Length: 231
Image (cartoon, rainbow, N blue to C red; front, top):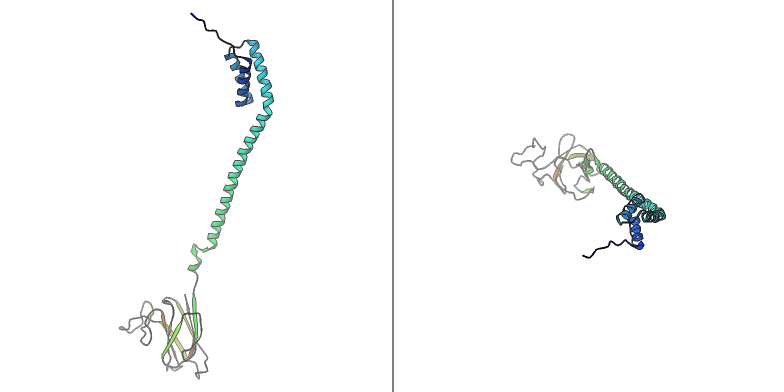
């Protein structure tokens, strides 16, 4: 029967094993691991002592490098944390700014357009000629003291402000009244809900305003006037 002899590891193998342990372990773990490996390889006490001595010297030599690596890793982790925090801080700032900008655009939760009032206006001579206007407005003058002002869109629900102005075409000023057209011509009366009137001499739609001018005694008379529609 052939006997198998256990061959002791060469010094080169032992040193390589020590180097591997030192490279892959921390300084505290490496020293204990080397002693365990030396014993497991079947080295006697003297050889184990020699290997441990070599390992200790290797660990001491590698310690500064390991500390630098550890510090670098910690620094990287800190930098990564700081970078994340910086990103979060930037996002938080942007979120605050966006919220502030949104609030600046609103008043009481309503957009600026909810409070914006459009004003359309014109000045008309006694003969129906437009002196000036905000745009898109036309005037017809079918009868004495009766004018129909047509706007680009409905003015129903808007505020009307009609005032007379002195015009050399007439000898005196008198009275003025204005109302939005569009009430039933069949009923021939003011709409009790909207305040519209039926217009017979001009377009009977909510885009038109009838203006009536008269003398102080109530007789129809051509008068120059200003008309503003607000809203």
